[in-house]
Image (cartoon, rainbow, N blue to C red; front, side):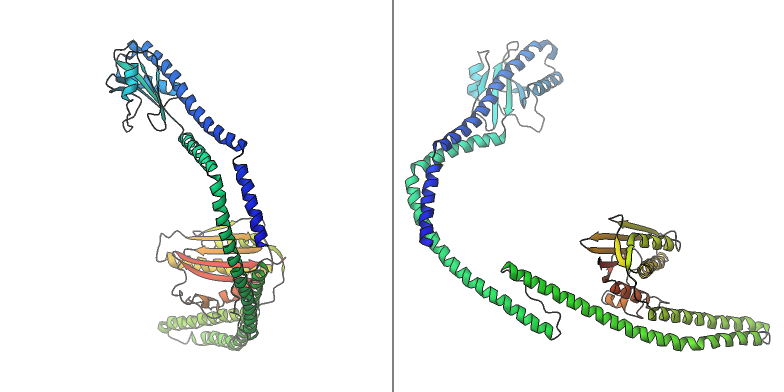
Length: 502
């Protein structure tokens, strides 16, 4: 088959080469050159007629101009615009420039000596051909001026000049190839036979290589399956460039591993939260029981002994009781946090507009500190998420509250701080992205342990319980989402991503 294809290709090349030297092709090649040449000739003829008009106006304006440099400059520039030329000069018989439209930074190119000599005693205009590259010029003696000449220049289109040169070269090359067509056919036949032999060798090599890559892809799938069966969800099939079906299989296999890994991590997180919830329930129960008798005992002590103590010690006695009361309230707050964490209900999913939920929380939290500016931007008028409205609202309430507290803490050190929180909501490709950015204190000393921030009872606040972001993380996890934290130059950035489930 390869020999038959080679013979067919040789005949095909022969007929193609004969077609290349067809009369129609020759006519097109010649016409393209003539077209470019006619354009250049037209420009040169036009400039010859324009110089007559410029010379006429100049001769007529002799008294008005009166060798005034500024008047000449204005007059020549006007003529330049009217006649659509690029340069107009008035020179003497020594080619010295007297008046010109050129600016100071432009260079004057005098006419060739032969052209000037031809118009010394002749009132007719003279075209200057092939004297300058990409330029056409003309010169003419001014009748009303002694030994003065008008000299104008028109720039040719650089592309057209290049086309003219290239067309001439193409014609020369075309006829050269036509003369050597027989030798070209023989040379091509030899080269083609060599190329066919090389292609045959390369095709065999590629076939061997492809088959080895095919079996290697199958082996990779087998080894990855064994590794996953052993519980290693970090295994991936290398995405080798091979058959499209195999590439798709490898890609889908890796996606399946990612989903399994995500589900496993989600299961581990849920089990961890259940364990922490059980512990929180027990702690809340054990701590809350003695709080009421302690509070009652303190009230009894205050009522019974306050009047029996000297006036000097009464203030000290009251202050100590207040301290105990404050600590009891702090413990009650902690117990309530434990209870909230332990009693997290299962989400009831409904279609909710996330935009409305965020706006409600922004308005609510704005009342804490009116000096803090909260910007909320979104890319669609309605962004729906299958979610539990109360739980999602709790997420944004907690995040905005954390940002406000962080900014307030920073503003105590920097009084003129531009307090700002930016919330961005985007819906793209079946995903919802939410970014909450502030210029507060950020995640202090958490560069290496920033992931620990969502662990229960982990906190950087003086009076924090370490449960707020844990609850946020659990809610987002229950809504098939992820949350990430990033320390930025002037604060903190929280990134949330939800997968839309219709």
